[in-house]
Length: 408
Image (cartoon, one colour):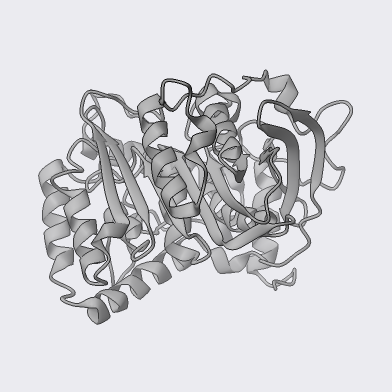
């Protein structure tokens, strides 16, 4: 989420804390209140403070064993801070898949499934038309904007990766696209979205031919946050490409990224840099640019993460693509870098997207209108048992947390 340049980091902290408090009050379910004293939001640090925090964090470990002890605490902090154990993890997905469309080298279908009973994940499934013995699968979460799942960058990368041989699932943030059961500013958005991402892995693994050892994820901005948070807590993710989001001083300006205490508890503190480092020793490409909070990545964030990989003797598994003249997006140059990295580590076919001049291109992608990509419409209405509204969803989550509904 991009913050106005005239708001300093202290003011941003106060504004976001107030927003979270108001959202919680509006939910009328006090049992679900977030402890805002433990939140680290927006530009929580200055750039110098962010670098100094990394220097402090680095003193807490000196080898692989001591890093893994810290890594376990950070991972536990995410799971506990986002209350991920409150929600069931093996309830039936009950997938809805319809409106298959076939294009040059790939197909697109409209998809929904239940991440827990009554709550739906919505998106589009891109598949290669070329039959294969097995398929890599890639999650494609989007960032903030107006219905960004339907935007050209998501469509371009999803279709292109499908033509390269992967099954790709592009899915909505809560409150976006077809995911209208809550607003995006729901105080539990981080919990809901992270749980949705875990269940999206389950969904991909339920598809015929998907290779469980070749699961990837990539997204930009808020989708970048989803990328490194899921990778940190889910070892099923084999390869990750977080784009324009890993920063030592910026923690994400939306409740869906930092509205729950995943960075801090009463006995630990961390940042998104260390959360991203939990990918080690799995392959990860950091994509950064010169015009947002990732501008220091080559000198600050990347060396820190590369040092973590060195503890495993796996520095070749982590890379940084830095585009100093570019800004906060998932544009063509960023996508090309991701294509090379994902092809290398997931066994995809770059030749399928190279033109006669030997260059990567996306000209075969057919950009569709939102009406073509909606899961729920007059012909395919939202299931009647879908829980609607912030209060109703909050109460449903609380019913699991309080043991009124059985978790598995």
